[in-house]
Length: 363
Ligand SMILES: Nc1nc2c(ncn2[C@@H]2O[C@H](COP(=O)(O)OP(=O)(O)O)[C@@H](O)[C@H]2O)c(=O)[nH]1
Ligand SMILES: [Mg+2]
Image (cartoon, rainbow, N blue to C red; front, side, top):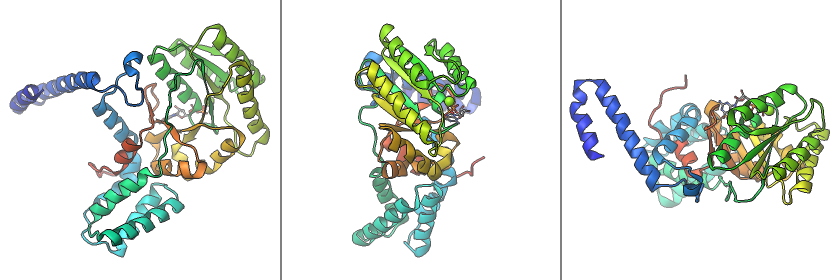
């Protein structure tokens, strides 16, 4: 590796093209090496699953996913880090930054009080010391699902959330993850309210070469889930992923319908649903959290998926999810391709937000 670096550094002066080609080669070689050395931490058996972890690529993915929040809200941290005195302006600046990132007023006030106490007790005098303590405190607000991709067979996953939060796209991406592990997947289009919803899932199904069980527009979503669970057993599939229609917290009958969907799944497959995942649109920030509470009241939500982190400047909402909903984060979605879904990693999340290496304003 050193040899390659030395080689392209030496000839780099003769033009950018060879430099680019060689740096790509270097990256490729490094990626291959990392693949051998580091299986994905979220998938302990990823060697069998054939999925590999590349820490450099992964770190960049998280940084990109959080770029908007980092630049818009946390961008100000760069000036706070350089502070050589902990003045009231420093504390106000820090408080504003955290509020802007949408951590929620209660968490922000708790953090500031804690940080002031720590600074006094430990005699801190510099901004960078406070930001390091902030980094540690932020972890306390992030609970993650301990076994996000368990070895249960067949595994039944139901996605719930408001309209447009990203359920259908996420269903396809979860299917893709399991397919990449060599598992057989079935998708259920339990969003029977709009014909377009079934079509949207069918398009993903065709692309992934996965069977989609659906019903007539307007038919009972419980019946679709029943048929899909039967099909899962009949086809000897490993994973059933159920996409449901979006519903508002005020629609009590639709909330009751979710409960029925879960019950029906459990009648056909014992222990099902194993995962009920609440898909939250990160761009709605704290507002989305208020709506989400109705879902946790209606069904036994096991994990949260924070979708659209890439489009959001309010990624700090991730820190409020556990304290408001009492549910850990399972995945984050950060783009529209099949690969833009990662198991939640608290360390990557905090580092992606706080580590400043660019301060340019968002486009
Ligand atoms: N940028 C971005 N867009 C997303 C993400 N997830 C979903 N979307 C987009 O959000 C819109 C609504 O997604 P959809 O899956 O149809 O939401 P649903 O109504 O909850 O099923 C679509 O245009 C998706 O492409 C994400 O992680 N990042
Ligand atoms: Mg949908």
